[in-house]
Image 1: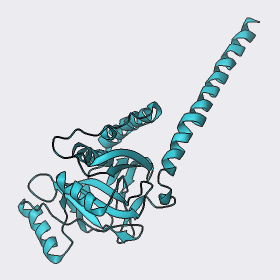
Image 2: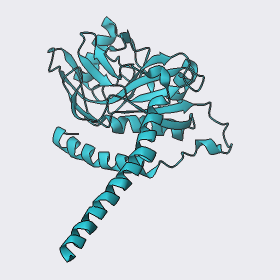
Image 3: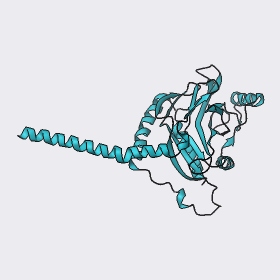
Image 4: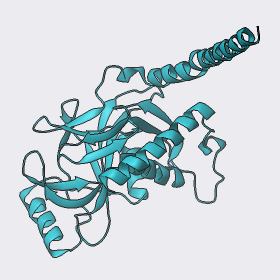
Length: 275
């Protein structure tokens, strides 16, 4: 009898655990996931990965900004980003001399990537050091003329160029990126929030969690695969109180837990791939 009672107790715990798991999935996790997918229904079926002009998979889409083009440009310039020069013979020579002679070129061009078959409409960068071999850079593409907020949505891909070298796929001269794409995405948005150009943020499903991806130059990267979207606004006048809506709402605990778990995996992958 005692053994039978023990088995029943164990099965009761298993059953209770399954019920709790069901409740978490059915009433918290899955509705949250579907709410993310439905946040911008106009993006349904759209790719979340760029390609090079040769058709090689490139950087994943990892950032988005809702608002007009003029406000986007204003926000980026005000937070320290500089527009990248177009690729011409002159700018190509200048970026080469910048790297070889270790001299500044804060408006150095970025290579062309395609999103949904179209080249980037805007590109910005933040140099690090005395030449163009190390820099934060981001490309933006217009994705929706009217997002759910009633404003245009621009999707972007942001990463950090850590050196100049040879593409592992084509043998061409290119920048090599640092693997931690999420850090670049979060830093860009943090700068816009600090500059009071963002009224709120949310996340959209992107390319999906990736611990060992490769971009168009063959560089490894790691990402949680989410797109961090900021809703742009004109900043308040100097001295004005920050509106309440600028204070980010706390994340649900299950999403915060997911982010903490992923942060651990990302740190481990970054240690293996090199920062």
